[in-house]
Amino acid sequence: MAGFSHITVEKLSGTPNPMKTSLLVALSLLLACSRLSAVEGSATANGVTVQGKEKTISNTGSDKTITVNVTVKNGSFKELPEGEMEYSLIIDRSDYSPRRLLLTGTGKIPPLKVAQVFQVQAGVATYMQGWGTVKFYFKIVVKHNGKETVVAMSNPSFNSLAATSAKVEGRGGVLATGYNIIEGALH
Image (cartoon, rainbow, N blue to C red; front, side, top):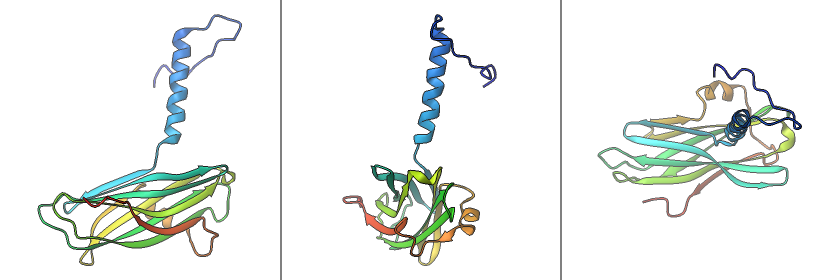
């Protein structure tokens, strides 16, 4: 970004510089789009790939409701037995107390044949614009036969954030458990 430290905008009464105007528009779009990107995390281990991605369920008025779409794929050369998924969600609110809330839940993963994919929505978070800056983090742990197969996190600092978060219990539906298999997702 060397050379871009000083951006000026011409006065409306002057002749606009097309190069500077184009640069300003491009930078504005870049900044606007960067705030709109969804939270993601993925990992592959032991032939299993787990990918999580934030998904907006509804965005009405001052409330926004999001979930994590989770995809589990058997990329190994053998069938996987039934497994279990543990998920943890954190919602971090800059202008609210407690600042961070943590939700944990579990769900079953059906046996997966080679190259088979399973998709599920894990957890639900609803928040209001009045909470200031809101950040959302998640961790997905897939286990088979009681052993950890793969772990995907949206933030490498998830465990330390979780350690300083308030567990969700009776928080008025800000975070809610949910394990909704996406229709037709087992193929």
